[in-house]
Length: 251
Image (cartoon, rainbow, N blue to C red; front, side, top):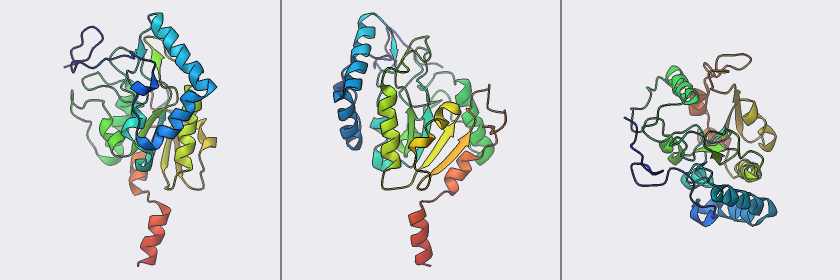
């Protein structure tokens, strides 16, 4: 049963859309803070905040309520896998600040259904129970999967409406920080948009897996069908090269 919602509030009483364009209201893990603070102090960051304030004043309904939630739930030192999305879901009550994830109780979008379908095909993992957690990937985020959209806000019923307003500068910096980090990471690049970020990743240090987007429009199409890609088992088999070397040295 879908969560009851009233007056733009979820059943828990939390807002289901953006109510403030003040980054101080958007918590992030300490390891991301220098990056986000520098961005919002920059000309691009200030312009983005001005755009968000203007659209809120004009009555736009903007999702999600916490644009930086991926950076709150997954600290940089905890990142082991990165999954890139494009922009948040634009339906009321769907977006929860994590790529591909929807709030508990929300019907699963087609792309997320295909993600769970491939997870079951690849690893035998059954879909999560509905309504809780349903399509919420909060547990993944808490276990080191950075679920990062490249644009972090969107207006109701207007997909891509905040693209090009500045979020991409911040999220590109996040990708670079992960790429330059101390430990190796698996990047899952699903679809042309995500694969466009490949140049930001040091492929000599990280494992980069490519497939079509999980959308029904492309999930089964060549050249790299999402269904059957086996990415989840490859993530499970992957090990940090330094850990592997240490294991070899220890016999």
